Image (spheres, rainbow, N blue to C red):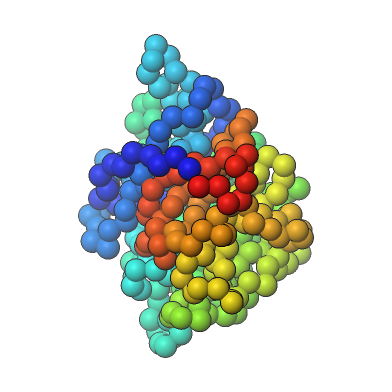
Length: 327
């Protein structure tokens, strides 16, 4: 693995993804450390957007930027969500649902969120959706760059469901419903959607927070199917070039309870679940993984030991050429 260079944390937390399908040009470059999401935040301000939007998806955007005269030339918009972080302790997965000890204690962050589109060439910011009483997270851009899939807790409600909006901010529509939390979605090549959901109806066995594991559904929310029977949390699915789902699985049963949260793969139908990287190396939460186009490498966040709130950590790169136990 290659450890990359840290930067100072921003004043707000944001999540980002590319505004169009990416095409790499040139070799991999060092990328900043993912910004730490502090519990004490300044109000959300457009001036903080670029510093805040440093997730793996933005790393993929940077890989797509061609160089002109030795300087990067950004030729794609950035889609990002701006929200407040989870409130229950220092656990990376504790940012949705309610505490198992108190059904009136909700674990999501304070109200107030925006879904935005930023043109880095001009600095123009377009707010696609704003909800002063809700929460917005996990935006993903469709393969044709016409739609944005995201998780949305509408103002006055308590749960995140999947929603979709056009890239210009039009045609907002709800995909999933119910008193569950559907988070961290990604588009599937077959037209469906993979995501993590608390529909498995269980809690982390050593903490207050609900569990979300891998699910899938059709583009309209129908044909809901549970893909995993894991006992504890799974996170941040993405698509590998061969069509498999790459995701973070917390291994808990018959293992140390806090040491194995690494990268796994499965087929989009849930079959052939297997280790991708790290399952024999205790420590670290390997999360927000994304394939680097036209390579055998994956970029991800190493969120450290048992994880850091909102997935903060070091940006890392690993090649599958070294096998699942490479160091």
